[in-house]
Length: 174
Image 1 (cartoon, rainbow, N blue to C red):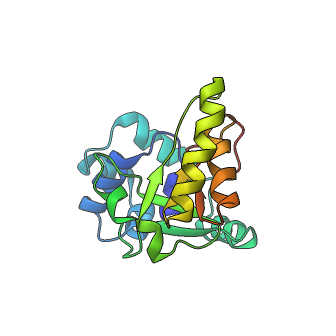
Image 2: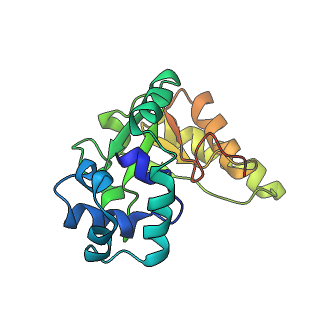
Image 3: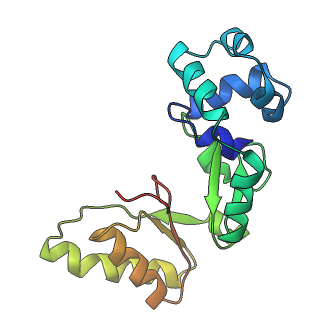
């Protein structure tokens, strides 16, 4: 039901918090009547999106699609949800994961930069990132062109781990 709600426009971390606080489970929320969403302090526009979307979204079918693609979900309630991510102001309620997060990934470094590289950025990013990966840090970046791509490539060339974080998801073009 995390995935089903996440597919609805207008539902983000704050709405997930409200749903989790008001309902015993997200399954109960999915099956709730519209007045219960109002009691949960959801905005009218979000309630309307839920009303429309529940007619179109089959939670079980959507999970089957993820399983076919080898995508796992980690919810904010899971013990393997990244500890530091949970500490940000509005952490995402769920993460879509292809591959495996490992315990050593807690010791990581985010490398984010411009898509339009300077000569200095082109030279220094691979040097620093490869050295950090060799030292055991997991390199985390956005998989965008430019600095992000260089960071991932350098981590791999340094025989280290790298994690790509996609804000839009793998099924969307940005």
